[in-house]
Length: 320
Image (cartoon, rainbow, N blue to C red; front, side):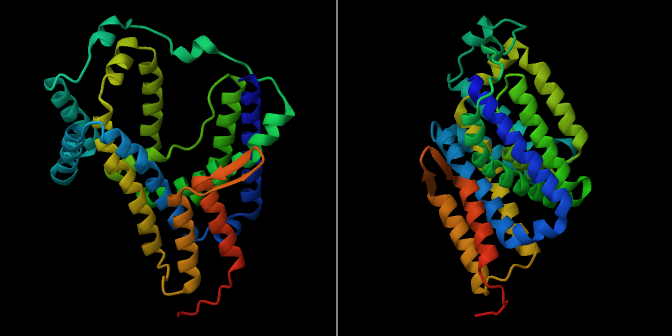
């Protein structure tokens, strides 16, 4: 573990270098490496890659999953005012109540949990012990979260209808991720990255103000030390959460499609079709590229392939 934490410092270094590169080259570099024909399918993959986890959770009890999903959809479609902003909460509450009625919720851990309890991770606290091996090993692995970070910023920009790539700037958001990784490694925490799942909630609720995220972060820190609350949240059946995630993760993929439509990506151009097709196929198919102990797969590999194809394929804009 100490060596792994040192490796996370390597991830932070990659973020810092990418931040400096974007600051130096600006929007020109982003438009060259990550045009809509690359970003669109990457965003779609972010949603689709999470869909497996949602289905796995939902299939533990499809009845609970569908109840949670249907209630969330009804609230989102027909709700008014404040209630329309909390379809996820409404879906979870409805599914949880049904689960209690079905006798699927065990309250014994809640009763046994103390009111105040520190997170279990603090009991196994580690400090980094620097070594070159994990440091260099993690540097290429950081390619995936860096590209996913870029995709997430584009998603949030589309949802909020603001150009966050320009203001505050992708170089600043990239720097923020790097600082978070560095802080995590120095204080014995897990590696951190932009959280794609949250973009789904933003897409549904349209709540994108940074102040809301700050309040959520502070609330999560406070809740983490309330033992009974943590136990109560853990008592929610996974099927209930799975039903909600079927909606959340699908909205991320729809934002990717929206990105392609808004930028009028012409699928009659063979070049565009090739880039989108190969990117999606490799990501959904679970392609893995390995070399020795190093391996890259999923969104990271697909995004790299999309970027390479975009750079090497001739761009004549001829329709076929």
